[in-house]
Length: 267
Image (cartoon, one colour):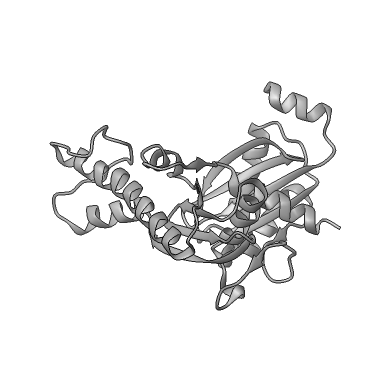
């Protein structure tokens, strides 16, 4: 058992399972108060049954020496899996998970055309970000899709934009062309490259970084204020390193948001 987990066990009051279901990956986190004890990723598969997710969850808990949990909360952008994963959690942990959605207290002020249409992942990320970083701000979540969430100086969610995700775009040109291969998304070290693979990497990494910079400039022009820029998501670390602006990379932003929402609803 690692030292971090041993310390958490000694002072443990409540262990909470936070589950962020994305289109490609599902992130699992075990929280002891504000302390993230451990985390991991499993593949999201809409065709997996309750037992499949129960086996994955059981394995994750055993690998991290977690014997039991006291509560759970789910954020999902795959509604068809909500009931499946909720039942899997109950099967393994014997707790009924909260699901971020209608009826859940988030504490987030939302001012868009249809607040009910705002994705659970965007809500959760914004809840965490406004509690941690100065406003106004923009949150970029780099997953299957790249999303931007703009929060004004009054901590109100006012809108944003949705773009094609980095891997989604690379996979699209690889499968739609005869001579472009599949590549891993890493920085090639320079923008002007001399071979196909590095050229694709340059476009994916530097092209995305430049796109984020351009969007921030436009957002700031519309608001008339400087924004705090937060980046999260699977490729957030790779892209944020190449941005020519001040960027806060927060790997566990959504897990923190799930913790806050759980605490606001646990009674």
